[in-house]
Amino acid sequence: MITETHLRSGRIEIVILTLLLALGISLRLPHSIFLGGDNPIHSLEFLHPKPKMNGIGFDEGLYRGYLNGIIDHGLGVYPEMVQEYVEVQGKMDQAILPPVRFLYIFAGYIWHLCFGSDALASLRQVASFFSILTLILSGIFAWRLRGRATALAITALMSCAPTQIHMSQHALIDGFFAFWALLCLWMLWENLQSGTNWRWIFAYTVALALLVITKENSFFVWCGLVAVIVANRWLQLGTVRRELLLATIAGPLLGVVILVFLAGGLDNLIATYRVLVTKASITPYAIMTGDGPWHRYLVDLLLVSPLVLLLALGAVFRLDRTKKPELFMAIFIAATYLIMCNVKYGMNLRYANMWDMPLRFLAFAQIGVLAALVPRYRTSLTAILVGLVAVFELRQYYILAVQYPLYELITHDLLRALHILK
Picture: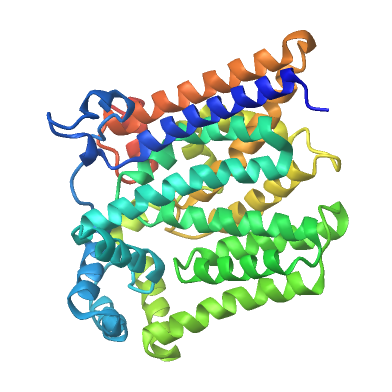
């Protein structure tokens, strides 16, 4: 029987969720909409601190060039763009990103057709929009994992996540990619729980295909998903059926087929990745910034989100077979981390954007443990701790990206932004 207390509690949760989403969305909107004295929301600029780095980065210029090519000549020009990339990249001494990162560029094209924005503005607005979708998806995923209270906490933590906000302000693919990676992770969880629900199987297959045509880093995500499926044999996170295994293979294969078609043939696609890998290993910037020991990502995460990382590590040390959602997240992070930290000259915290929600889920689990030390005030203490972590995270973003012109999330720049290096 639904009591007046339950109804009041539900209304309060809706109000809190609405406020959290409003905060997270305002922080992710392109800063240009807050400019101008006649703009009615100009007075709310404090909700959206302007990033100090407002120029056009190297990668942003390349994405803009690819999108302009489609705008000027249509999607039919794609095989020619891939062929031209192979020829140009082969003559260069450094690696440049390939046009086969199709989905982000195509999303920018659709945005341009719908709203008439120029290429760079379209790409930035797509990055902003998908960062907002990631925020919403994180809350839904958390709710499916462990209920409404967890959904509220994860929404609060993700609203203020520094790397999520940073990616929303630049025409970079990594925040966009993080959405599809998180969607695949959620679909895997739902399939493990639902058995043979064909709607979840279909959604999982499509999500994997879209992930593959977004970026080559999809291989890392796929390995993480496979690791979860394999670990399920011993940890019993859910039920692995034949349909799920087939979808895990069919989804990426569908994505590869789409890429082959876009590239104008399998030879072109293979040549694209071969020349990219070859040049990446001799690119001076990659050699200078993309290498390090196996704990490089831990160092960078400690610089950007120290409280979240420490809390998440605390939760990892308390894992047991009864904590299935936490095990699910931990296995995915560990498997992808194991591969990513071994990519020579290819480490960058931008690539770890897909860990933001799983890390905060683990961090909240540890907050719950700490709050349980005072049972009488557990709910209030949990809310206070989540709020303090969220405020600290937002302060980190302000230091890193508003006071310092942060663009690349490399260790050197993070150390300078935090005044560890002068």
